[in-house]
Image (cartoon, rainbow, N blue to C red; front, side, top):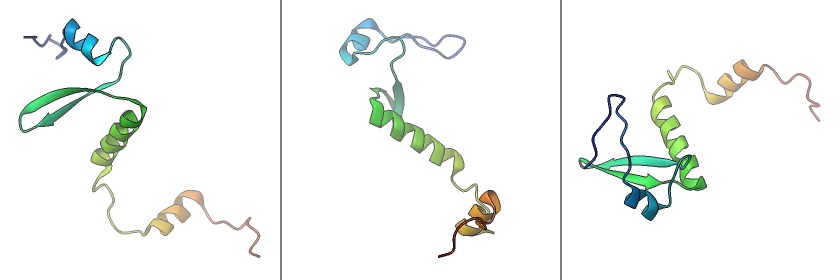
Length: 86
């Protein structure tokens, strides 16, 4: 059994750290499923996927739907008057 500190931190038992091959600086994630939380060691691809999923969660529904994507890009970047129209 582990106990949360006042800062909501836990110490991962040594046997689990060794089994997962994790140590200081390792990237891990907590995954909740039906009230059960799992500690998952992340590799490079999983770390990127986790970051993208977090970004999607935080930005989902943030658009107001008043502008199309091309209109937003024109507003952000400005007109492309300097391009050769060929």
